[in-house]
Every structure is written in structure tokens, then in C-alpha cells.
Length: 221
Image (cartoon, rainbow, N blue to C red; front, side, top):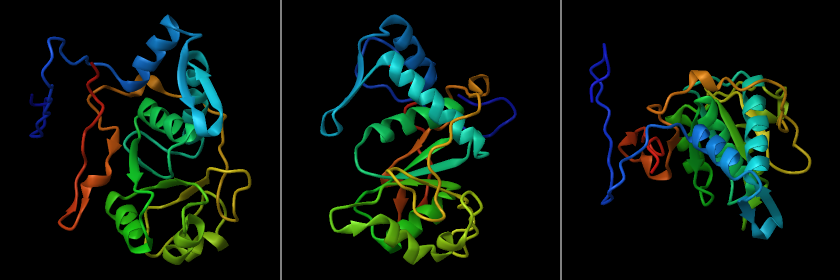
């Protein structure tokens, strides 16, 4: 399918199934689930002892999307997340898709040089991160790549190696100096999002030959 006034081609791939892909946005599908099954479990995170109904998950996603908008994140901007599995990870994925931003998955096992490469190649404007995983302290690793954040005002980062990175959001109890906690105070502009937008960049898209954007999770069965 060729978009009007564009030479870019849109490609849709569907596996062996009788039911075709649905031209719906990820946020739209969540809204429909919350309307049809508001009190059924929508997300269970056992290791956090947290449980959300579809209605509760929808509310958390909406609040997170408003927070991103408050930071000036717009449709098409790259939002990275460097974290292990968590409820915040799922909420962030839905929130970025809802507002039209593109989620960049950062491998939890990445070290400093890999982190720098992924953030630079994807042109991430915002990064969410946890304290660390196994023997890797994410905050210290980021500081080795981007030492400026410890001396910057939250939301006003200027990095020599990562010129696109402006916002750092800490997933945890107390945000380190230079990082932001979640902000939730603006309405989410869902009318500006369409189902043909890319919503996520997966880990395999960072290769030695450069970066490419994968349009994933657009069509939903």
C-alpha cells in the first residue's frame, strides 16, 4: 500500500489465520477491552504483587500519557525504556502507543557502549530507567556515558554524546539528581494517533550496520 503523496511503502504481514488484521490503534484496543470487561484482570505482575483490572490499567495508561505530554513529548518522538519486566514497562508501552510516540526497548543486559549506541542511533529524547539489574547499576552506567545529567536540571539535559536526549525518568522510589519522577497532568491527544504509525523499536533493530525502525504492533488480531 502506497501512502498518498509519498514514495514510502506500508507493509502488513499476517500469519496463518482466517481473521485479518484489524486497523486499530493499540490504545483503542485497550479502551475497548476496558469498556467490555472493566472489572476483569487486565495485568497481573506476580513479582510485584500488583494486579490491575482493564479499567485500572486504562486509567494508569492515560495518566502516564498525560505525563509524557507534559514533558513536551510529541507524536513520533522516541521514548526509551531500560528496565526489566514490570508494571511500569507495560504501562509505558501502552502510553507511548496511545500518544503516538515510539517506544525504544533497551536490552536490560546492555553495558555502557551498547547503551550509548542504542540511544544515539535511535535519537531518543526521553529515557525511563530502573536502578539496575543483576551486577549492572543503570544509573552509574548512564553517568559514564552521559555525565552531564548529574549537573542538569530535570528535563533540561544537554549531552555531548547524546544530543537528542533531554528527559530522564526514574522508575523507583527516589529519583536521582537530574532525573524526573512521573508527571501526570495533561490530557492525552488520542485523536492525533493513527494505526499506521510505528509504535515500537525492538532490540534487534540496533545492529552493526545501523539503525532501522520496525513498525510493530500496528495491526492487531
